Amino acid sequence: MIDTPQIVRSQPQQTAVIRFTIPRAEMPQVMGAAIAELAGAIAAQGAGPAGPLYTFHYRTPTDNFDFEVGFPVSKPVAPAGRVQPGQLPAATVARTIYRGPYEGLGDAWGEFMRWLDANGHRGAGTLWERYVSGPESGADAATWQTELNRPLADD
Image (cartoon, rainbow, N blue to C red; front, side, top):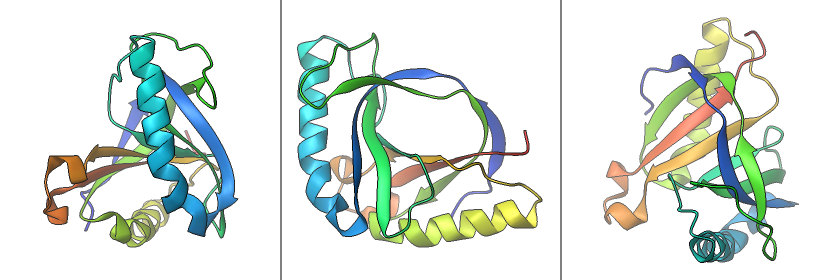
């Protein structure tokens, strides 16, 4: 289900973000509008996007999500509506690729966390997903790719 995880050092990346603290069930309703708002603000400021959409979770998701949705940008953005400047962190992370529909992400994260435990790694409190390819790349969800990143507490 997931590629063999690797331990890598991520580099800081400037971003444009919208932050949410919402019940898990509301995530599908907020994502579309947030993506459109981000894309519009980034384009209006001539800042990209400079990479794929991502979600950054400030704590491990439970019934509530404390997260931001964002895009990497080619230059800093000014606040515009709900859009704020942000940054993906530099960190030592465990990283893998999940291939499949978004509905399988929970199971993919479970497999990834079991790998971390089995290999003696402790995850820090945050995590992020980068949506490398999805519905925009074709209707076959089996070809979609999501990069899973878990900063390590043991770096």
